[in-house]
Image (cartoon, rainbow, N blue to C red; front, top):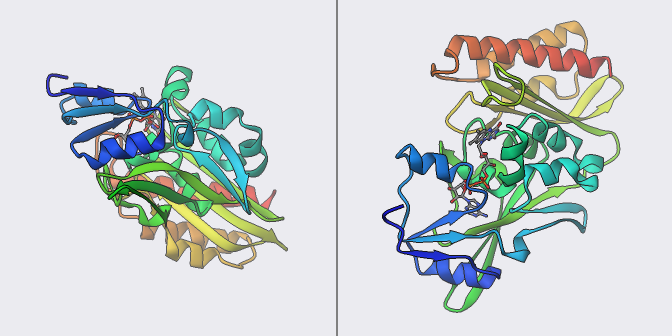
Length: 288
Ligand SMILES: Cc1cc2nc3c(=O)[nH]c(=O)nc-3n(C[C@H](O)[C@H](O)[C@H](O)COP(=O)(O)OP(=O)(O)OC[C@H]3O[C@@H](n4cnc5c(N)ncnc54)[C@H](O)[C@@H]3O)c2cc1C
């Protein structure tokens, strides 16, 4: 706290972007990552602390074209309660239902979860399999600039993203799933929601005649960032979900991930979890 010289709470996107253009700014949304990280000495506050909670442009969930746009300030509780999310993106609501406690859910934002870039971030897995894009805004020489990129390209390492220091994450844009499209999420932790994921898995596809098409698979907590799993996706694509196929896909998943040992689990245990949970999820899909 000692290093903060200015505290700002802009009430418009333009004000916030002007502030960011000035440089040396720490962005604060719900603070559920920023505050513990600063207390643990992992985050050093910059000269300006900018609270973004009063910026209306970052609030709301609305359909636009064929997409659902979700503002960066949307909290986990709001995602859980939102009728559009429940109807069109139930896999995202499901992940929110495995996220921390009510107190944290009420403060934690979707934008904070994305920008914190944890390999175990729980909303990131459903967002990856839903083909989400991040929407970033900045301002230079008096002009607003917008940029959109696939979430799959946003993360570069633990806590690291392609967001430039003068950019604000405005929200995410997710294509509304077409008929027959379904997605599933599984989080494994020692306690169901209160724990950080030991591993997490997302699967999406269009179910036709016992097979999944246009498959997406994503894994959490098995690499420096959340990851898509192209080999597992290929093993699953268009194949009838019989026991042999499911066994092969689960093996491919185990071979594809490259986790590390850490305080929550060994690499070996994580690989076994990926194998067993992928198999369990696909057994469930096959009998859906
Ligand atoms: C007890 C506890 C339990 C938790 N459990 C879980 C869990 O189960 N699953 C899980 O995934 N996470 C969990 N977390 C982590 C945390 O709650 C989430 O990552 C949360 O979504 C962060 O959102 P926030 O609004 O609080 O972010 P903040 O702490 O305000 O910010 C996080 C980071 O994002 C940046 N940032 C925030 N918004 C923007 C924006 N719009 N544009 C650019 N940068 C931005 C900040 O500068 C900071 O670097 C837990 C945390 C705690 C303390």
